[in-house]
Amino acid sequence: MTVRPGVEIASLTDVGCQRENNEDSYAYWEPEEDREFERLGRLVIVADGMGGVEGGQIASRIAVDSVREAYAASAEPTPQQRLLEAFQFAHAQVQGKARENPSLRGMGTTLTAFALVRDQLSYAHVGDSRLYLLRAGKLQPLTRDHSLVARLVENGIVSARDAESHPQKHVLTAAVGVSDEILPDHASAPMSVLPFDVLMACSDGLWGQLSESEMSEILASKTPPEACRALVQLAKEHGGPDNITLQILRVA
Image 1 (cartoon, one colour):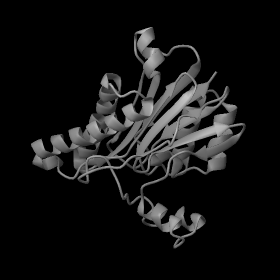
Image 2: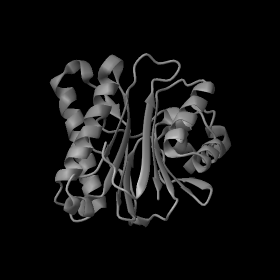
Image 3: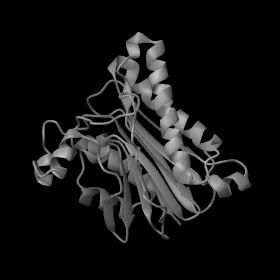
Image 4: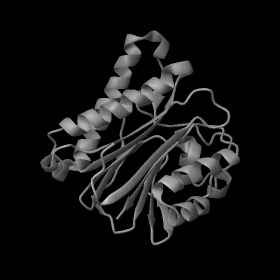
């Protein structure tokens, strides 16, 4: 994986402690040509699949590959528009694969991706994988979960504290490949990143097992490769019931 100067990035995926298959997928991409890099920047993608013995793994891989392919080929003028077009392409590709193979019907995937073009961040998101920003020691999620419990919290029916242990915590209300259409959440405008900012895209197998303070402490004190290993290890020590995938990018 070629990474131009300006950031440090690390990625890691783990099957966890209770699953037999890893249904998560991820990718980091940047163009080979410098001129294209100036236009397209860096692309980070994480997906968490669902749907039968192999459907989830297939759905997440199709989604990741489709976003990378469509973002690179898009003629849209802005990174945000390119991401949204790529998400629609990924949705169609997952659905098309399911139509071809009846055993894969119902498969789907979360999808979280961000593009960093120079110092401008754009992102898009469907499902309950997350994008976090660590800035000056403070960790904040940039994405909003598309889940039943998140909707209950937004409507004031369930408290944020009770949501952490709610039995339907991981029931999704949106996923790529499942419904007729998707409406990805996205940044309303590009966001400027600052030196020493840390961005982390991860599946719920990570954030579902760790507190924000645990994640913040590790992200602030370790290099991206060290943080990947430490976060996965801690999630597994907490039970690791799901696949665990994360990508960490630190701005130089």
